[in-house]
Length: 155
Image (cartoon, rainbow, N blue to C red; front, side, top):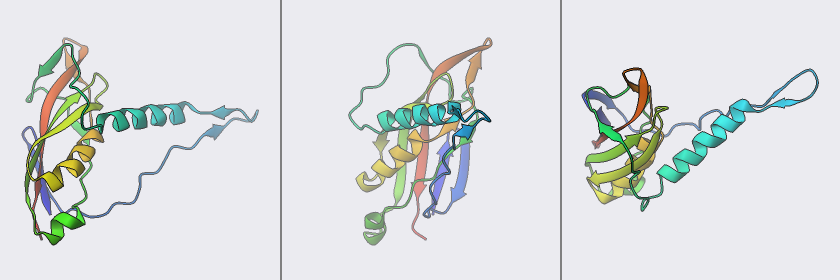
């Protein structure tokens, strides 16, 4: 079990294995032409997540607002799997992950800044898959910085 805390949002959950997400399928028009807009969007999202998961990647530069109370709402907050090695060692604790969220609500950078080493990798990967609604200031979408906390508790 672990508690997920994002800014002021906190949720009790139990870590468990999840089936893989369904993938978008290409749509074929009457003329036989594949409509692949969904596949392109999925491919772009996959690339962003893969880049986000690189542990030594530098933090993006530019105008990034630290607005924990004005941050967009969490649309999707995947739960990290509790690593078997951590379970066998009866390891638990809180992992804090700093994230940068782009103008579209995608996490483009994540770094685990505290918590047990065995739990940091899965926490960072879960944070990279999180999605938010875009944060708007005066009608303009902006990049924001926030922190996500994963509290791993043995059942």
